[in-house]
Structure formats: structure tokens, C-alpha cells
Image (cartoon, rainbow, N blue to C red):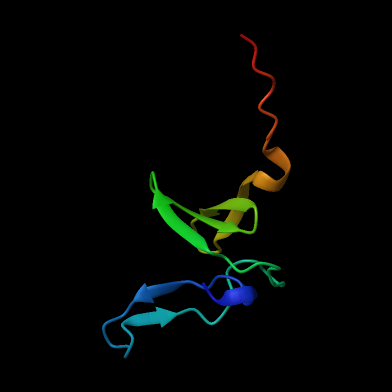
Length: 86
């Protein structure tokens, strides 16, 4: 993660002082920046997920990795609990 610029990838490289060799280009978002910096990143069920603001993305691996929006919690959350009756 790289603050509001977005997300960059890196791989383990024992020859590097930090042991990580970072890519030169921002992976997400391509050709843009994010309004809210990414704050959560997890691996689950063999996939990488990350959150930016109220949106959760899934990373699609490959030579040119992409990101797929999974859910926008700002749009999809129904906070109406309904009415309780006895």
C-alpha cells in the first residue's frame, strides 16, 4: 500500500536491503489515484482482497494484474432493521 497514490506490488528478494523488491508502477488504480487510502488487505480462499473507502476489491492475478469490485458498502448496505412486533 502506498497511501493515496494506490497499491504497488512487491516480491521477496533476499538481495534487497528491505528484502522486498517493489514494482515501479502503481498496480491499483491504473492511471489514477484513490480518494481514500487503502486500509485493509487480506488473503482468503487463495485470493487477495483489499478495501478502499467503502469498496472491497478482489485482485485478479496475472502478468497484468487487475482488480474487480466485489461490493460497494456505501451503496449495498441496508441499515433498515424493520419493525419488531410482539
